[in-house]
Length: 391
Image 1 (cartoon, rainbow, N blue to C red):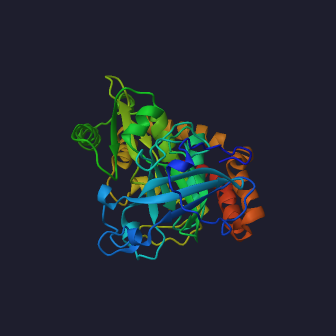
Image 2 (image 1 turned 90 degrees about the horizontal axis):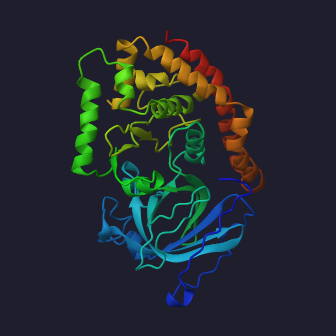
Image 3 (image 1 turned 90 degrees about the vertical axis):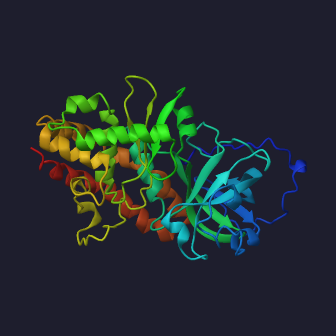
């Protein structure tokens, strides 16, 4: 998000057609810029009823566990959106924690509720019917900053921005609003007529799953030597290098997720979408591997060399390193090009809005934001030195 760019969200549904709740807003903070306030209401029974409440039944999925809520959004102290909408829980393991813990939610815009497709994100133009309101489980702004970094270096990540979230009048802290990764949205983003789209966590069509498995099997089991030239005909390697660069530079330990896609054309190439960088930047998580070094000194190349579970991205990385002498020079050239983009100005463009916001409204988060800024600056020399291991 940007300091001077507050999006105007219009809702063409006339108020008199819907009996909106008459709730006060004196519990909401006053922000003059930067972060929107999401004020969401839902019947307590729809949250906690033992038979049908979405928090009481965290494994419940589908429309039977979609409940009507009422959302109003404030931007620069002005109400810019108001509508009923559908609400579901979002996530995997996190949704199964205690009923009182913070949850992530999916927001569904449907005609029966009022607002249909609409744009709620400042940095985007697409109107959508689904959004994800994700809880920040560890430190605030980590996903938003990571996604901004990824998009700026030429990778692909969903648009995301921080919001201050209130649920039934209770302050739930800073969440982030992001796009819901799905085939329908990426068709519009890429202006394509047809896509092959595979999502690591979620349902995929049988045909898309078959084609993903075909790629995965080729990378894992094709006879040696596996050559970079052949892979360049299958995978967009500029995208792949930006994708793995972001894993390594940002130190994302929980990286085996996201999605990949390609146009359904003869010579189209696969591209990767980054997703869920909760465990990145200054957040340390080792997947049960003990680490004592500071986050900035982490050797995240090990995430690919010795992955915590098999994945075609790490398999491809390791096979090319071992079987094609041209890959190490290509890796170093690609990474050095991306490293050259990262300087003080680059980091400031990402961090300035967060710095100004916490200085004015959330001083208790200033040290976290400063720690992330220093990580982004100091990480460069660490990765440059670690890159020298590849001859």
